[in-house]
Length: 447
Image 1 (tube, rainbow, N blue to C red):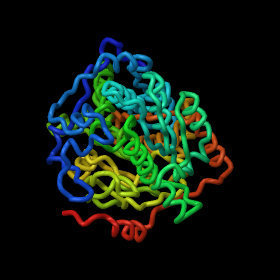
Image 2: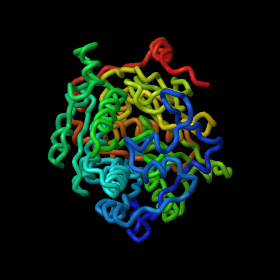
Image 3: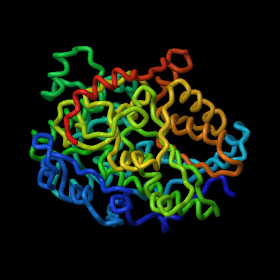
Image 4: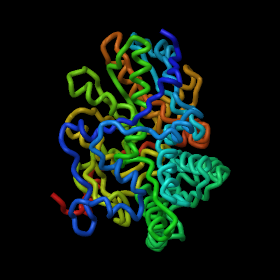
């Protein structure tokens, strides 16, 4: 079996897979935050273009990828599926470990799969500028890249702790032509209110979302773009899992375990959702989602309706949540610090189809260093959670099992995190249950 399995460009998927028709139970509808009634498409039009609203609610199992989007995808897609032979040998396992290398994109992560699509659909409807949030900066980088490809303006609100920890993300975002601001900022009412309450606030994804949505609503030429959570975002990421299916078939194998890190849920869902029909038909595939103990939405959050942002501007979504007012500890996996997770992913977690696991950041950095010293590549702190889970799975899985994890991004712009790790300065955080319970008291009372 080859170490790298390259899918010919001619076999790159031409459609995205929509999991909505195949979910084990119907997806709970998003609700109007004021009336608590199900949203109608027109209620989303101030922040999203019509085409993406239609995708969000589409009953179609497959949605064609426009040729213009495929043309940009071809810059880096299809991405290779890599056999991690040196990692296997170092662990001493007879399992075969593969990783889907999404770090090959211009932005260095899986995020451009949806960034390009969202920018293209917005431009097609006359939108001039996109506003967005970003945690660790991967999504902000991806959307900046996409907007540069399509001649659009872009404004990024980056969680302040990551803005300070990862200055090179901001440099790359600006070099693509976008503007980036630490959140909370003084540019929006949401940011100003938080700074008045806590001048030293380090921010959260929920707060950065509030700022980006407020910005979009206030400007007629601007829409909002989200890097995870919503159905249309997960839809665009399914190109990853579809390619894995093709590549494993080329290797004459089928996956026994699919592993990914989980923040908002887009990269993990993009890997596993194309395999959902197989699992529901009886295939013995295990889905393992890895998250931080500092932000354990799947392992400790409640499955209930909550707001997607701090200022309660977004619709109510039924998801595993730690409470929309949650302010995360300053762990270095900034992309995994969201208080909730994608409703589609939470639906199948609640159905018992996904095994969520939570890890401390130090043990994930240990796994990242082990991967670097065996396979030679430096993973992003987010990706290190998937590597940790894949290694643990290889140690406990039956002999000869096939384990596939999504290598969601490289760590070449996260060197300050590794510097802190090498100096012994990383601190493990575990979110106390009493903190979760207190935050959940602020969730809306919706049955």
